Image 1 (cartoon, rainbow, N blue to C red):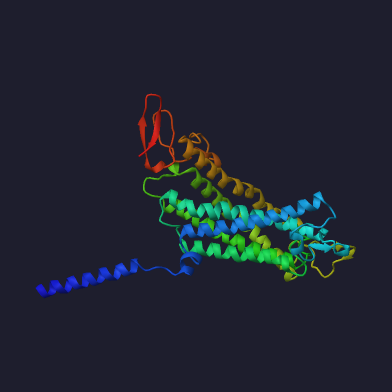
Image 2 (image 1 turned 120 degrees about the vertical axis):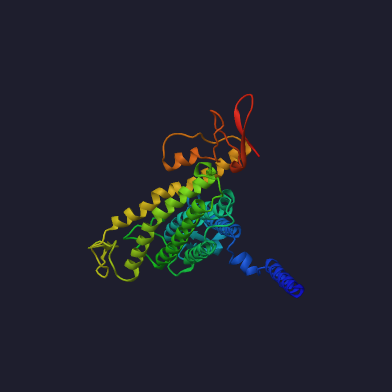
Amino acid sequence: MAHAQAHAHGHSHQDHAHHGNGHGHELPFWRKYIFSVDHKVIGVQYTVTALACLFLGFCLMMIMRWQLAYPGQAIPIIGSFLSEPLIGALPNDGGNVLTGDGYNALGAMHGTIMIFLGVVPLAVGGFGNFVLPLQVGAPDMAFPKLNMMSYWIFLPGAMLMLASFFLPGGAAASGWTAYPPLSVTAKNGETWWLVAMVLIITSSLLGSINFIVTTVQLRVKGLSFFRLPFFVWAQLVTSFLLLLAFPPLEAAGVLQLMDRTLGTSFFMPSGLVVSGVTQDALAGGGSPLLWQHLFWFLAHPEVYVLILPAFGIISEIIACNTQAAVGLQVAGWSSFSHASSSACGVRRCGSIRRCCSHSRFCRCSRSADSPVCRSA
C-alpha cells in the first residue's frame, strides 16, 4: 500500500512539473508578435498598418493640393522621389511637376487607401480586435487563427496595392470607384488594384464573421444584448453591414478582373470607341451600369461602416468620463437606434435609467435626487 501511494505521489509530482514547464514556455518572437493569435497583438498590427497607410494617403493628398495651389511648379521635397508617369520633368532641371495622369492616379489611390486601407482597418480591425473581446468578457476572439489569417490576407493586399505605383504604367487611375469601361481599358495598375481589393475584402469578411460570433457566443453570463456597451453594438452592426455589402463588390471585382485578363464582357458595351478608335478586340454586350449597381451596393453602406465605430468610440469616452448614459431606451428596432439605446449597458433604476462605464459590474442604488447606477 505504501509503495502504491509513493508511486502515485511520484506520478502526480511529475505531472505537476510537466504542466509547470508547459505554462512557463515562452513563445518565440515571430509566433508572439508576428504570426500571433492574440487579439490584442492583432489589433495593434491592424492599427500600425492602418496609421501608416493613412499617413501615405495624407501625403498623396498634399501633393494634389500643391498641384492645385501652384500649378506647373515643381513639387518640393517629395517630388524628387516620384517617378513617371506620376511626374514630368521641367526644362533646365527645374524639378518635377505632377502630370495629368499622375493626378488621376493619386486621386484614385488616395480614396482607396484612406477608405479600404486606413479608416476601416483602424476602426474595425484595430479598435475592434483590441477592445471588443474585453468588453464582452471573452478570453479572445471566437476564431483566433481566423483572426490572424484576416490580418495576413489584408497585409499582402495593402502591399500589392501600394506596389502598383512602381509599375511601368503607374497605379490605377480610374478613380476609387473604378468605373468601366475606363477601368477595363486602363493600364496594368488597375489589374493590381482589383487583385488587392479582392484580398482586402476577403480579410474584412473573415473579420466580420469573427466579430459576430464573438459577440453572440462568447458574452459572459448575464451580459444580455441590452447590456452590451455602445462600442460593441457599433462593431456588431458594422460587421453585419460588411458581411452583407462586401460580397457583391468582391464578385464585381472578380468579374472586372476577368474582363481585363480573360476577354469576357460583363461590363464592356458593344461599339466602344476609345480616342477615336473602335475597340473591336474587346468583347461587347456588357453593361457598365452593372458595375455601378454592384459597387454602390457596398459604397452606400460604407458610410455607416466608417462612422458607426467612431460613434461607438466617442460614446464610450463620453459615458466613461461623464458617468452618464449616452442614450435612453426608445421604441424602434432599427440597427442604430437599437444600438444607441443599449449604450453602455442600461439597467433599470426606478423611472430613470443611467449607466456606468463598467456596465456588467454595476449595482443600482438610490439617492435623494435620482436613482443612479454606481460601479461595484
